[in-house]
Image (cartoon, rainbow, N blue to C red):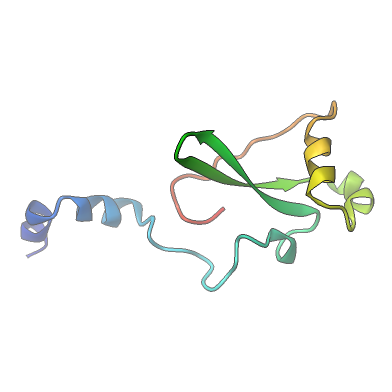
Length: 96
C-alpha cells in the first residue's frame, strides 16, 4: 500500500525521505537559545522577499563575560568587528 500512496501523493515521499516535519529535541523553544547555549541570541534575516531565515549568533567563550546581559544591538555590532565568523548550515529540518 505504501507505493500506491506515494503514487497518489508524491509530496509524501519528500516528507518520509527528509523528515523535516520532525523537531528534535521535543518541546524546546528554539527562539530562545540563551536557555540552551551560553552567549547566544536569536536573529532573523530576510534573504529575499518572502524568505526569512532564523539564525543564532553565538560569541566565543573568550568574549562570554563581555556578552553577559547585552542586548541584540551589541551582538549585531560584534558581528561587524574584525573577528572571523563561522557559518554552520544545519540542513532542512525545523531546528537549528
